[in-house]
Amino acid sequence: MADNRNYILAIALSILVLVGWQYFVGMPQVERQREAQRQQQQQQAAG
Image (cartoon, rainbow, N blue to C red):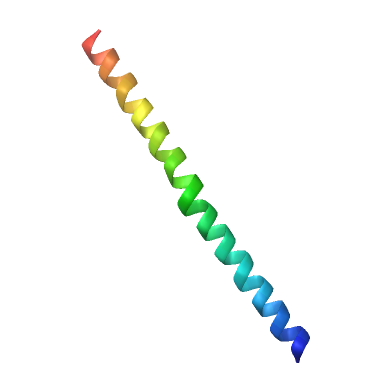
């Protein structure tokens, strides 16, 4: 029974780490890429 509890706890913590990583690292990278793309489009439209 304790092994089962540890297994579930390990899965829950792993999911928490993955979600946290996506929130704190993944989303800012996507936003930077979107901003760079917007700037590039504005430069092409102005040029």
